[in-house]
Image 1 (cartoon, rainbow, N blue to C red):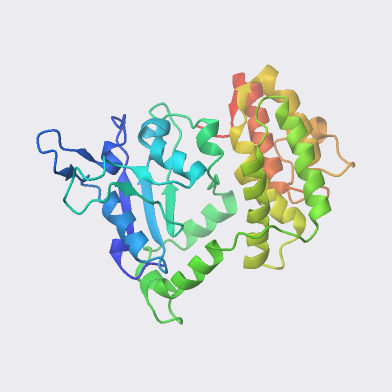
Image 2: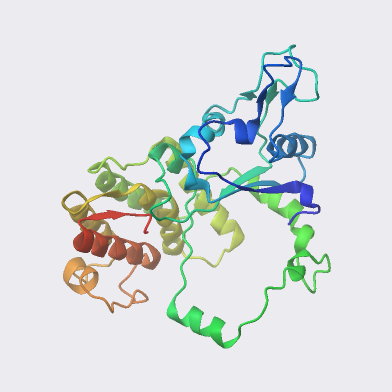
Length: 319
């Protein structure tokens, strides 16, 4: 959805990133009048995004958790909270077309790709609170379909401006319009509030409860989902919200998590099933069962529960 390649940067995160310099540069100690911009081009991307508010810009951090996110990304996390500008240097000391303060505009979208293994770092609640966590998984039917129809990925189909062959840049304006929608959902609000309070109370027992920011973002997410697809049921929208905003902060020992996961699993069911006996202890449970309210969330809870039982520890991020 970019008209030009200058609207995005794909930046591989290094394991040695211990401060903000790889993203935001630094003042030159030998030449005080000069500010050294990073080779990554992040500053240029942010400046361009500020100059073109009608177009989306994307900062894509590849393998974001190879280094501790809280170290190199601290300035961005801070301005997400305060809506202030990132200070780069003392005003009046530098003259090389780099502003003394950098505003992170609403049309800049930050995406991080993440894999979990022994070389990566876990995310803190501080990071997870400010993000929507999207898990990508492939089931057996999808893999079977891919293997039967294997072909090269046609990226040109995405870039074509002809609407018959691809959306491409034609989506940019609509994307910005959707992202500017900060409304709260109003449909089925009582049901949504009741569900969120149930999850809040249970998550609170393990210190993983959500705050006002997350509650606000959940209501906005549900409203956005309604805008994108008005055929989605309230249960389907809640399922997505639970997966993206509530479950990611869960991690801990079997003793700590198992009772929590059992209760959360029961929230995903009607009263006709016993969560441990009928669901969590079964390897072949059908999550499309009519008795399941939130299939995405229940399947994730079941995987975490089995991880806790088998390994004595469980986390949303599965290695």
